[in-house]
Length: 213
Image 1 (tube, rainbow, N blue to C red):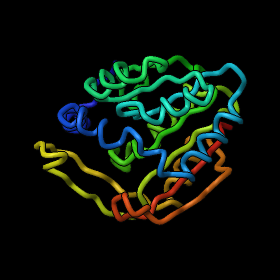
Image 2: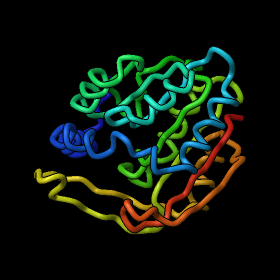
Image 3: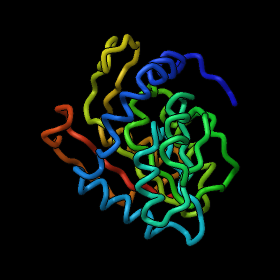
């Protein structure tokens, strides 16, 4: 696995909060009908028998939802502690430790992929590389479902779930991410935005469903 030094603080931060993060987000999808609908569409449009990758899966709650609805799922995350929690709590899912810029997967291994709020820890200059990696591991015409916070700011956190961390949360303009996806070899088929739910951090969110060309 290729190490990316710039992501080391992100990895350490998620290692530190893994248990509390998992407890806080375990049932998150029960309160997110749009997310569930998009994930269901992803399953429906994935090539029969092909696995789905959850890129930046954290403790695996999205991967577990996909697996619970009939998909074969591989969760990939930078944080070893998150991967350990996922393996413990969701035995139906395969988990791998790895970076979005060097995915531990073979060319064309997956029928589709989801990346919910994982690109928010990438520098803008890294987005295309990450999407090219996602394209590499997808089969022809495979789908990539991406969600992120909309904007141009960077929110830094040095305390999270009562622990000391060092992590940036980057917001992206939707049109910019669409352009990077297209440059990386995807065609965007669905573009949606929504306001935050009452239980969420106050940000607008974007969802893009893109197909590997």
